[in-house]
Length: 279
Image: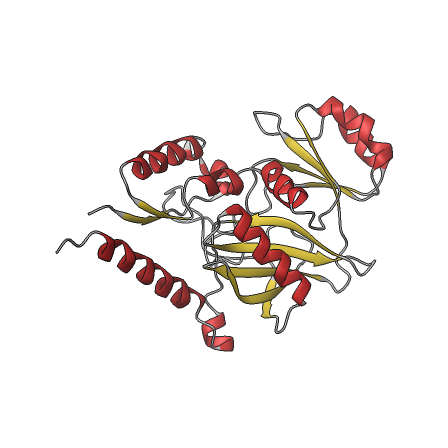
């Protein structure tokens, strides 16, 4: 009987000594798929998870509102775009995770000074995006969690100025205390002031856009992040095929995200079993 799998590749693995994780995971998943394995989300979502350029392309293809974004592969390419962008701007590595590598610049002079002094840190492959920063109108962003192509719940994420807005119990790579054993996994003690709360009845047009994205991308589960700018317009800026559900929501709001995800897995596994039963 073919195997049933769900991969948990995190982009921030790059920052924990696992530089080969993406290439290995992609090759391994495609190999398993070639043997008939059922992989939730599938190998195609690895490319989405690990490429902000791919995410921007998806939203462009669907004509969904996103911050102004360009994909660049050399620091010198920034100069020609400075006059075309509204500030503040962000520089993000094409493959990030947990807010790693994001740098914010408040004005053109600040950005130019960072370029001239070689203070901008780019990934080894030099691939990054330049993106307009959307100042949240109400001091929070929103993460929309989806399972089986549909929104299951939304949460407001109130920031403390950090770009690490991961809600996992084990994804704060900037914590003060390090584990006693250096096992190379994502740590689990959060030190930031980021907080999460349930968002009831998110706007229907955003829900529609989110469900169009997951359908187009072939995402069976995952989160989409957006914010509303001071202009009142919403902007989707991140697509996460890696589902990171807030465990505390079960106690706080009676929403068992991990339970819903487990139920989906069980249903999909049963389909695999039934399709392979011979009479």
